[in-house]
Image: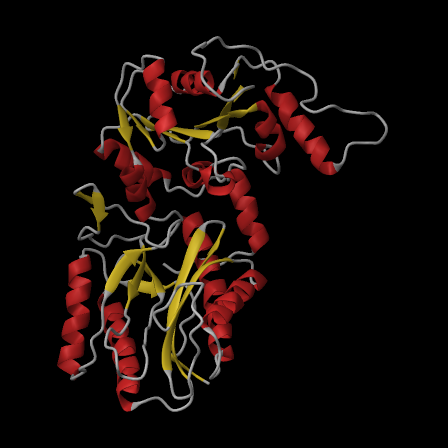
Length: 432
């Protein structure tokens, strides 16, 4: 079940036609939680559903959401979009020709409680002069906006548009999942007769099993992340400063079309670290960067000169433990079994270095999995591996006083009978 690789242009063209969400999985999870549908406002969830990052939202503009996606269990092949007429014209229209998305447009943020629908007015959204022909972008936006003209899906404000979309998509009477408090508040003000269910954890359940598009996006993100981290590893020298290596990772990730999330250098991830690398030091580098929201996660050990015997043994133990685990990964295996497999393999092989084994799903978040509620906090459940999951198993050494740190980590796709890396594998140690 090898992941097919695509060019960036092919991936972007795919996203113009479809959101990356695994819709079969979404239906399964909605059925499990007895949900008729989902109304989503968090930008990452709107993107997951529709392939569209809202320009105005908490993630990018530090504001409450103004664009919403609607999904129904009964018709998962159809979607709802709630956004302002301006943002529909100015952001959603760019590059898209989608008949599977029904739009509800509003003219003002807020919720006055007036559910009156109005016809989307004809004519340009922005003033249109006649002094020059429309540019390619202007022409495309004008045509996309004109297709909405005459539709009885315009409202005066965002709250009424959310209500109209829920009614239009058949969700008004039902049990509905939401991801932002403003959605529940709107439903309550308009006397929604069904139940509203906080769905953050439910959405993470959906994200566990990746669609083919998600797998392709993950492979693209992971490959660039691996190459960026290896470039940093090759640049490490005695005297290098932690924060300079972190800055270099941001640069190397950007060269490859990724956005850096963090780089852990010798167990340090603070951008303020002024620690320097010494000759003879062994150090882990663990880098995470993202492409279109999907995260690569990769770690290796660097020897700067001649390592101490203990550090060299620790690097061998980390790499050996990860290989032993990787050979055993399969559907049906629990997270706790992964930890036990690694620990038992090290003990049987006579390794004395202490290595921590930390499995986690990776996707639209670095740790992208549902949690168990524990005193108001989330803790990691003992998840069972399933085909379609993309997994990381962190294997850092935990001992101090050995001359440094070591780590080995790759991303793998769980297949029907095992696992396979989603990026090229490299030697566990970089020697400089």
